[in-house]
Image (cartoon, rainbow, N blue to C red; front, side, top):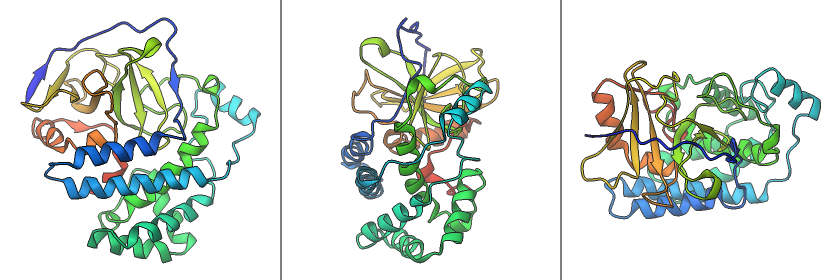
Length: 302
């Protein structure tokens, strides 16, 4: 494991504080990234399947009707009280998420790996109450090992619906929260952060939500879990191109990955995270705990 010095760039004056998900391209671009990362990778078959799952997410999102957002007064009240506008733990879930899950289960089940195929088959026939129980389990952050094979697909369906909801917001409605490591849109934890390229956002870091795919700007060289700037360091696997690094904090002993568009403009926080699990193993062995989940791995360590 190679430690990198922290490189800090001050934020641009007109940089947006929030980036909402692009409904037309987010999951399609992620599926393409999975396909690229799978080539020659030791986990290539798994990454290829995740690419197919992500493509199914794209297809579901494109056919999803416009969803009902909370009314303007409710959104304003949440924002004024420093709460996420679409709090996943309290917002009534659009029931269409179950239809999304069942359709993805049917679409993917025929060509899925054996274990995934069994999980998808059971999800396609589960009743509504059972599916809602699984959703509650996932969103509460308390997954069970018995459901580890099924929860990633539940997560995929919920991502579609919450991404749709987030994309219908106006970014000007969002406000920074006192807790910087929580999504201002849905209240979920980030999967990773992205150092982006382009005009006003050049070299700025944005945390990427694990659920709704919104992003929010946070200061670089600062721990995203405890906000300290002391004892923060970057690590990468020897011989890598540095497109994905782990930012560790000696104060809280947490870490989260950062992906860099300057190293590869096509990096994706979800796909590149899963393609660099060797980096997780290295920082885990060094005594650091991951501060935000990748929902395609949810339940794996329960």
